[in-house]
Length: 349
Image (cartoon, rainbow, N blue to C red):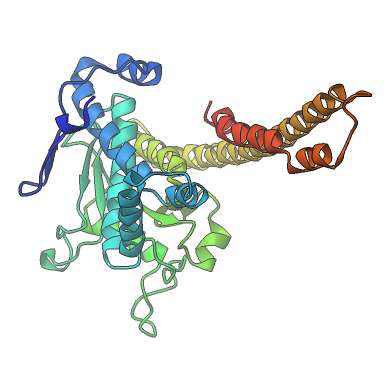
């Protein structure tokens, strides 16, 4: 697609893409598996998520490694990345976090064909304090606009401790906790269930000690740990699916609350078990990648040595120049670079 075909209107803050034909098999597989009705929304999400991932923190490492290789077009990307980094140190960080969580939920809802409605409500007053209270940054209506309500508070803040029912706010002017924020979000959004989303890179020590992935705070709701720096919201997807099932089950009149509590406890145990297994698999994959990288380096080095030995005879004796070429190992470095580019596909697949 020619570059000039993309039109940006700075006044209206819009960007227009021309009609595009894509042959990438991954893109074809993604849209081929979606119903016609959801494809326009999926297209919007792909553009949004792709842009977000491109500007995510991990791009900083890439830019640092390839600073001497990229051309001038990447300088603007560096500026955007720096601006993104600065914004995460300001009040704008909260809005960015809320938007990222809402986008992740919209993605799972769209991919599974649910009719849930996800709404960002961080700037909208709720039922408490005569509409002045804005706790509950994202609201999900399960199954449609009139369905059961799930309230989601997003707190990427080291000051927020885990808390419990004994931490009443009137005692010694205690600050908000994860426990109190869940309860407050549920009340403010008049929700049947609430959760709080925290970030691994900006969570307090008490939260990190108690929450590895997803945890249930008795009397409140769910605490979900995500890794925003890596763009990893998989725990949020699991927690949302779990919470969604709870709300749908609670809406059934034929289920006794006591029996439902037992099922919830067992289900949460299995959720944590699955997340734990996934963590072990991730570690195994990463270890395998390192082993494959080392193996590739050794293979390249052996090939270089064999090639050198094959070129030596009575007319071409081994000398300092040949030893220096072997020591410098240009071909080995090339092999390592190729391996580093290819290995991430192992985990993605």
